[in-house]
Image 1 (cartoon, helix red, strand yellow):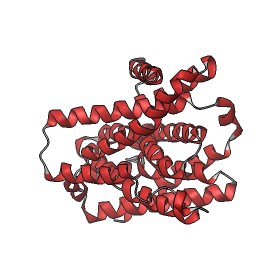
Image 2 (cartoon, rainbow, N blue to C red; image 1 turned 30 degrees about the vertical axis):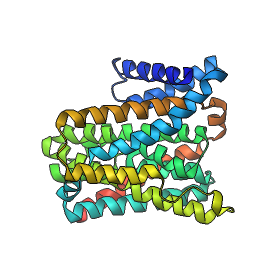
Image 3 (cartoon, rainbow, N blue to C red; image 1 turned 90 degrees about the vertical axis):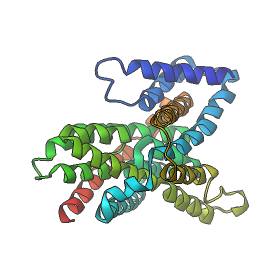
Image 4 (cartoon, rainbow, N blue to C red; image 1 turned 180 degrees about the vertical axis):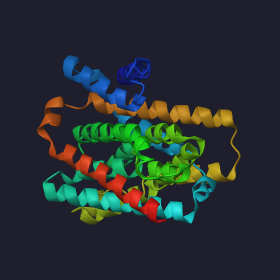
Length: 319
């Protein structure tokens, strides 16, 4: 498939670009979206590449989300205790509801608001991709949401470690705060380990606990979509197959001792598939359409960023 080759080439460029100074802060997924957008808007996408691009955007992304389940065990979730799980769950739910409702108030399209809410409250680009499978937003909305989430997640990664002494947070408390509030997994790891090993480990587990909540969130959105559909027979199932497979992967990873080498290979495969899928989305994004969205979605993402940071910090200080 020519489209698959094109997507793979853009993903390779994204991985290579991380070697340049200043770009190491960004994940290959984000660089792939940007590279895909530049390519499609400057050179255009050949018609014979469309099928491969569609395959990458749909099938590869679903398989990647399933593989993310192998990065998590139920034992890891238990490691931060009931209080930690409660903080993560409360922050996720409150942030999602706040973002969706604020989006409605300021006139942001409902589907785009849901993508921004999922990316902020759960796990960045991966959550946006998973959520879009049931919300079915336009490619430009997905691209906008990914860009906004990346911007504020990067600010959080760089800024939150500087705030730990200001708020008198020890390593455990800071790790819990970072894991409960920063957007992408890589950003959480980057921020957490800046304050020490215990901080980094706590942040990683808290973040993976948020990732585990991706499945129930997608199911809930699927149920909402069916309820709001005028033709229930054509609505997507409330529990897509990839969500069930994600849960099964978490269960298998919790029950079976998988060798470290296989774990590493699975994690790499998941990242490559996500990068290719987001490259495909970039190839289908129209910059003029992105401009037409205006600044309101960016304001929404900024407000969600402030809310999740403040809300989770208050809970960490209280518990």
